[in-house]
Length: 225
Length: 209
Image (cartoon, rainbow over all chains, first blue to last red; front, side):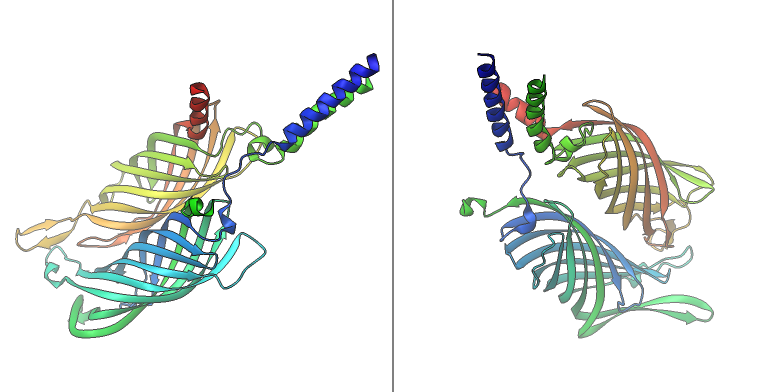
């Protein structure tokens, strides 16, 4: 009788254990291995280099992404970039655009995902000369609208199921009215000359972007189910 | 006696196996978790140089999308400066920071973060001549910056945490006149509040059932 009760207890415990083991610990969805449909939202900081004025700029922006296929993602972004022109004036660039990102390689490691990107952008640029205590330079402000195309490469670092950090470099060509600022030496005092010229020209700059993204939703979840 | 031991081990085994799956179980004393909402309001001191300290009211709201990663929004309202007169009399800032919380088996949460921000800045002295009014004006500039954050929190059970943190702000003031480096190191400490939004939802659903 005693042995029978022990056996009963053991059977109960084994059954309980197997039940407990079969309980799945609920983890958030793993977005690193998606076939498409992922919507993500993020912020970015952008450095602008080798522009027409030769000064580096620094920017703030955001983006959202909609991944269409396993190998194809889209990014929709907006940036505000400011550049100090030798302490004599500033350049402000407002970018709004989109890029298509291709994932040509499939890596075994889930955390690393390089990509090629290309896209379009619309841009508003304003160059302002600083005023001094004795000279009002506000009339030297010039601005222009332009369209741009960009191409580059980058990588995601998937640091979790829903999180990634990205680094990209892209060259952006602007097609629009020429606007440039030159520091000239005017009888011993430095002065900023801001000029715009009629007629469209191509000018470009290198953008290096550091971003982070949170995968918010699987847009095609209902279709998959 | 042996049988009793076997029973205890058998009971413990599934718990141990299940525990391998999550950080919360791996680190049972860890309060942090997926779905946690943190917030805090305090004063912050910014050291732009050795002679001037800027005082801010700082607030943050943070959500943990994962057990070890969070996104937070920070706001700094510039109040005043101590020491030598500061070059800015306005430096309000808004930033979005991505933070990594280093896992450990304690209620202490060390973290590092990085993120972009925007600052509204205005010169305190100098400025540019406005030929229409004939006055020297200091216009407000909207300037991007990058913030590097690091800190330590201590979570009391459930609702509160104490924190001490630092942030290095990297940016440049640009407006209608003179430009200069507005980078500074900020230090703050205080009391924060936290609630796990996902857990409270679950418990509400349970109570409805």
